[in-house]
Length: 252
Length: 234
Image (cartoon, rainbow over all chains, first blue to last red; front, side, top):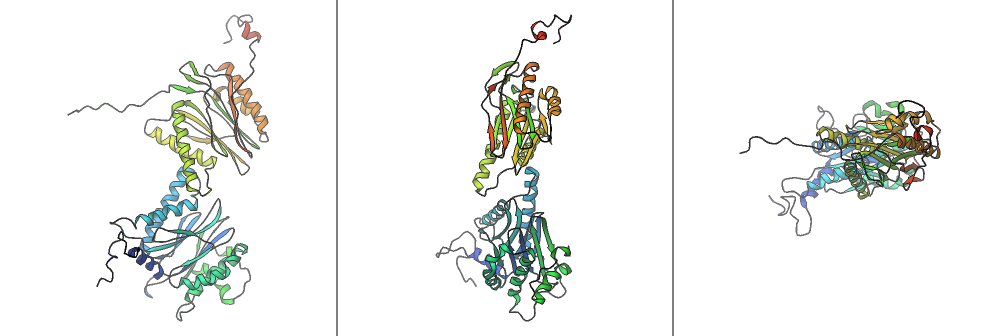
């Protein structure tokens, strides 16, 4: 039954210097459906693939609005993500109450990463089984961060996490250097194309208004989620394969 | 067992106090000034005390009222800027943020029935925008083009409002503030003619060394107040 002597509690190192519970939590992130994040000089975009447990069920929530200037996409346990989103919302509100301005992204991500870290060092806790891609816009421009159950966090130009995220990352590695000079529409297109890579190998799934959602935040745009028919204009560009700029703003 | 517990006691009146603080918003920055007196009751106890503070590279604070409370607030702000430094992410508090923060702190204190007995004027200049705001001992916050605290509300504000123009320069602002302090020195018994003037402009924050204002006491009414009228004009 026990494959491993050192994986029953979070706080015990294996002789190889590893914490197996954390690695299992990171495995939960890899099993979650894929999310993609990209950023240029003025905007940050998230694209997500929503999954259902059955044809009768609605899709799992992948995108969370945290504040007017911050939002996130999740891969892994949705219930854990809900708790973290509540925490982040409270932090943003509190900051706004005390300082009358939007919370800097670096501070928010640091706090949520610290929350992850605490769960890796206490006997009575377990790591969060969720990875976050957090986008936001503050005084220093747009940001894209990833957090991990281990408590680590990174800032990126483009990133993808979740199931088959490696194929999306391969796509992003090819284009990330061009992102800063992209328009918002081109940025969204790259996000959708990267996301499509994660389902390319699957016969029975393709991106549609049912399973795809997009979120944008930027200098003149509060964090906005586009799903169902609102996401159609962004998907249409993929279908036709054209790189023509589309009228993305009108879909609100 | 002791059944009767003494009630919690707080200081209910200030001991060592600073007088008026004056602030004026200009097109190219803000000017805040204070005299250098810290009175012990009616005694001019400390005559070279600075009541102006550089908080960040773009933000100024001037304080009147209880001096020890002002020093405590000074400590809180140093903490805040130290924390910002430790985050190492280049985010600094804007004048507006500091104004709001001080409002929260002073409101929290007064809600404990133990207020910081101060009136604070926050000024700053960020991204070509001047900011000037005030916080009182109840935690009330407000913004205005011209601000005064203490006796300056009665004697200074009317002069400031008359002199104010949206296109004032900092240099003109300094002249106006000096004039206001001259008037205050003639009429306010808790003032001194030694002032400091601080500015926040595109070049950052500067606080002048204390300097004395020229005063003129040989007006007829000063020399022989009873010569023209039967009763004193004072």
